[in-house]
Figure (cartoon, rainbow, N blue to C red):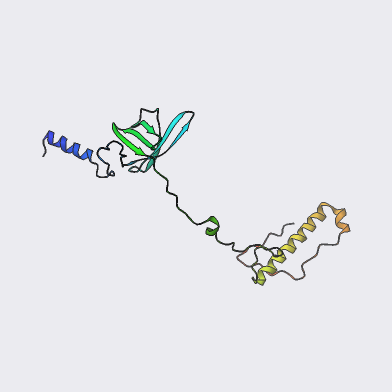
Length: 191
């Protein structure tokens, strides 16, 4: 086993060099910006003061710190607007962070990404019926439309009997509609 002093030294060595944290330069010289787990992403100035957006890549977590806040583990020391450098103190360690630059890439236009309409509606044609579509579907839709017209006429006649007497009786479909297909439910015949 290790003695107390050797054990303490070994513990210090392990905590000083975390194998899971991204590598950080030991000491940034004057004018150098340290590359580490913290990224300076932006700032906002409003009536309540200045807030800085930081991102901890080791924890994959972003947060905002205020220039006036001195109670957290990270405190703002200074900000140089000319160079876009933020100087902070993280747990007593001084760090200089440069404002991260956005990378803008050209992409496809939105119109090029959208697929064409599956069944466009053209004037003079019924929507939902493809050209050269199934004749049974067209007949069934026409039968449904005729039934809707007939029921409207009956409803209007029941609400206004005087006007219904002057009009001709509601037209009936010329041919009896085919039985609806089993996969499409037929409308109820309530009057």
